[in-house]
Length: 174
Image (cartoon, rainbow, N blue to C red; front, side, top):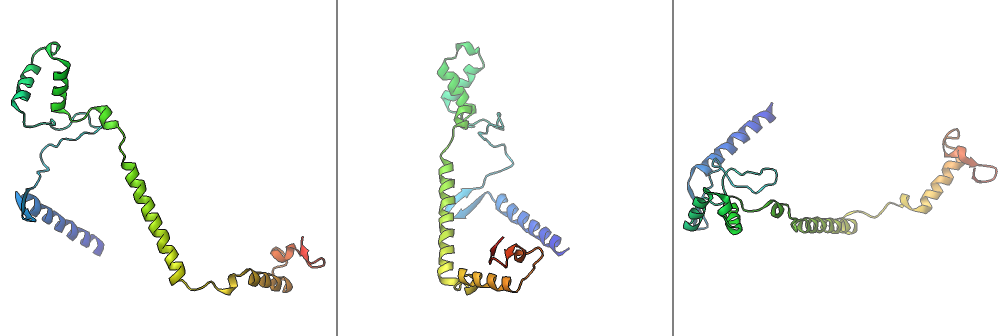
């Protein structure tokens, strides 16, 4: 019950903080005025899974772009290849091959992974040297062999345990 109440209070505060930030048209940050982005308006995205974005890439057209848009209304056979490409670039920023082209982001990700693995290794090494106590003597091979000999002498678990696998007459494992 308390957990639900805390979640509701947190979401209410988050909504109010978001509303306070987005309702102001400008805000001061480091003595610079920056405008907030209205996320309710259609946005442009270059994504392979969404072939037609909500709005064209270029909203503000120059005079050359406007004349090209007027030529677009006529027959497309009269347009040159460069004009068709320019019309495409008015609507879209990238072509499908450009969107599918691999980036070098994987190098950054792998570098970050290896950095944190190395740092973690250093922390573990530091802890083993300076934090953890020395290993107990019960982990030594000599201690383990003496313990095994004592358990065999006491004949511990002779039916199904390791004492059943010891030949007491020959003094060796069966």
